[in-house]
Amino acid sequence: MKKWTAVLLGAILIMSMAACGKDDKAAGDAATPPPTEQGTTTTEETPPAEAPKEGALPTAEELLQKSAEASQNLKSFAMKGDIKQHIVVEGEEKQEQNVNIELDSQLTLDPVEMMQDFVMDSPDGKVAMKQYITEDGIYMQMDDQWMQIPQESEQEIRDSLDMDSASPEQQVEQFKSIAKDFTVAEEGDIYVLTADVSGDSLKELAKSMMNQANDPQMEAMMDQMELKNIHIVYGVQKDTYLPSTTDLDMTMVMDAEGQKVTLDMKMKSSYSKHNEIDKIEVPKEALNANQ
Image (tube, rainbow, N blue to C red; front, side):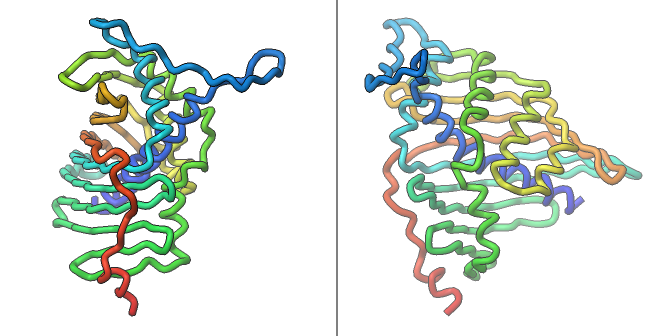
């Protein structure tokens, strides 16, 4: 059971990190004007999407366009996540367990750096970890002990944050296809987009995220995994069109080594401090870890 918890957790974290980085890249490309017909070029900028008429809700397409434009200027943000998982392994005997994860992160996008507090609570116990990913190195704290990740082991982690490793065109097309399923509502100072998505397109999207992480093992695992459905609730700030909240509710099933593994996951994320974080500062005790 511990094995499947680790494997599925790894997939979820990589998907989350890849989605976080790629949404900004895809959003920027979504706002890039296409070439004009017959190969001609123009220096005129594509005008932004018109604001919806007063009293009328914007369409999902309008919100996504404005969100794409706003994301072009996004330099940093903070994110909190709450992930609840119910894992069932069926083989010679049936095993079930619940795993809860809390994330508290701060990210800068140029350069790509991150601070993350991670707490996982499972039947095997509670694991708490703090991690800093910077241009100068990757540092981790567990059990009140700091360590610096060896340089030869850094690349795999950095690849998961690489914003240029996947095709922007593919990401934009996938995003557009999901956008068609969104409905729009209004809650206070937030526009809320909601969608229920199922089918092969979800598996292709998940595989694309795995490819972004450049992890052959994760890609092979996704080939065996069936993403049954996903319920998405995405909140956009009315005044800035930057993300406010994202709720994901999904079910995944995979067969491996004669066992059927089912994962029901609910992930709630909230975003704040847009463009307020100048730099990720590593604590002195972490910098002195290997001295």
